[in-house]
Length: 343
Ligand SMILES: *Cc1c(COP(=O)(O)O)cnc(C)c1O
Image 1 (cartoon, rainbow, N blue to C red):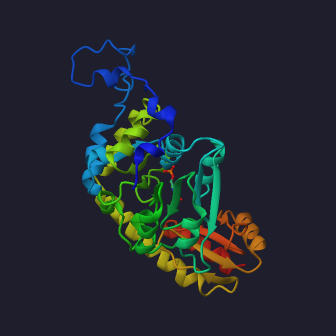
Image 2: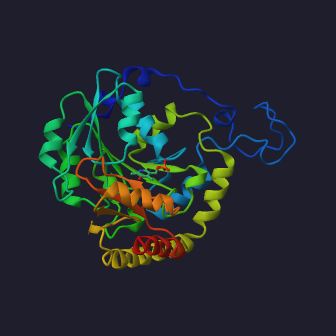
């Protein structure tokens, strides 16, 4: 049986969190003289809402979740780091993840001196469910999955993901950074069935807001409370909260962008298929393509010389010879194709 309390580090259970002025009084008052703020330079003189209540209401409505199931952080990266610090005892706990995948799970674990057990995807880039579950032991606190996965660009089968959630005795963190570009639905509706599931999403990709640094974690209210307990008191600044409130009023704009990007993806797949150095384009459920090219380093350098910057993923496991192309604007996509055609 899943027991959240047994997974939380003792020091975090015992922690008395910092209580900010805005934690102690968050109502509407006429005179705020409690936080040593400057009375001038309105509205930036004021500390932001530490729990981002207004923004959470809106996001929760869009995502079909409750505000108490939502944590907001300085990018998804903050949620990744906080999850490790809530659940992983340095030099004792370990985390399990897939390989290849997003690098931040391993970096955050390394920073916290937590061992990482990596399990290779199958050659078809699918989950080795048995391998992942076998890699876990009684010290495995978190298991990171990413779907659609970066850099392989494909989604995993819901059945495989849920098999892992059901059989792993720690917490499964499912990173859905690219879910808006996917034909697969989010697993947020499954949160009510699985108290050991955490889902990460972000404003950095489909919402076009990588610069404001805003990441989301969806989970049980108990897990969300633990993240809130250890976060920096004012982790999401007021400019970020304001900008996100404006953007979430325009979900149609985000949807238009996603549709444009999906068209761009089709265009790039069609055009890349005609180019001789392109050996293989992997099926993508995200806003980027993983592409196998002949003479990878030369193609990469040639693109860079022509001011088209792509990501070299050829050193990653199962990605030999691969570059990663982000889907850009129509002009950017055309430029990439033109430069490759002229090679
Ligand atoms: C881009 C990306 C993110 C986004 O991280 P932020 O800190 O929210 O910008 C998260 N996960 C994956 C797999 C990504 O590729």
